[in-house]
Length: 214
Ligand code: AP5
Ligand code: MG
Image (cartoon, rainbow, N blue to C red; front, side, top):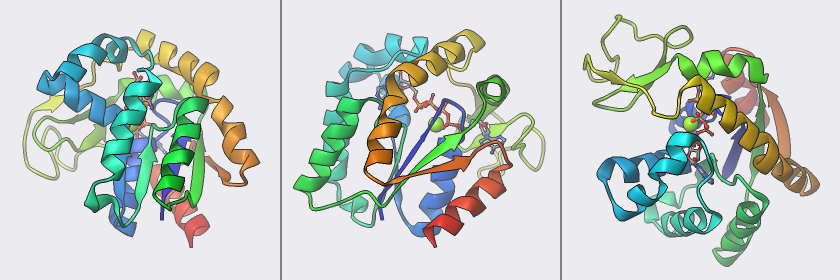
C-alpha cells in the first residue's frame, strides 16, 4: 500500500505518517526529514539546500525527485511507502507518477489534511523533539508523560527546528497555497483524493484514516 499525505506545514503529516508506518508496516518517506539530515551531516547537498530550508522556500524539483527515486529502490520500501511532504509541486507529482509506473507500483490513497492557517502557528511554534531519538512532542498537544523527559529514550535534551519561527511558518504557508495546492486538483482528477478534517485531535484523525483504509 502506498499513501500520500498532503497538508499545510504543521497539519499533522509527520505525526500521522509515523502512526500509519507502525500500524501498516509501511515506510515513511519525509523529504523534509531527509533534507534536514543532509544539513545536519554537513554533506554537499545539505550545504546546498540549508538556506532554502531555513527560510521556508522549496528546494528544486530536480534535487527532490532525485532523492525520492533513489530511496524508492531500497528494499525496505517494498511493503509500501507513506509520502510525507512529497510531492509538493505539479512537476514533482508528475515525476512520481512516472517513477511508480516504471516500478509497476501505484498510489492507493492521497489524504489531504485540512487545518485552518490560524491554528498552524500555535502547532508549529509549540513543536519540539528529542535530541537523542528524534521523537516529536508539542507543548500543549503532545506532552511527554514526565515533563522534561523523553518517553521513548529517557533523554532530557530537546531541539526545535530552525524553520519553526512565526515568520518562516507564514512564508511556508504561502508556498503551500501557491505551489502545492495545485496538486490537489491533480489527485482529485485521478480519483485518489480524500480530504480529512485535521482540526480534530491526533487520535481522531488517525481513526478517520483507519476507517478509510479499512
Ligand atoms: P517538511 O519537513 O515537509 O515541513 P512542512 O511541510 O512545513 O510540514 P511540517 O513538518 O512542519 O508539519 P507536519 O504536517 O509534518 O506536522 P506535524 O505532524 O509535525 O519540509 C520542510 C522544508 O523542507 C520545506 O519548507 C522545504 O524547504 C523543504 N522541502 C521538503 N519537502 C520538499 C519538497 N517535496 N519539495 C521542495 N522542498 C521540500 O505536526 C505539527 C505539530 O502539531 C506537532 O507538534 C504535533 O504534535 C501537533 N499536531 C499534529 N496533529 C495534531 C492534531 N490533530 N491536533 C493537535 N496537534 C497536532
Ligand atoms: Mg513534518
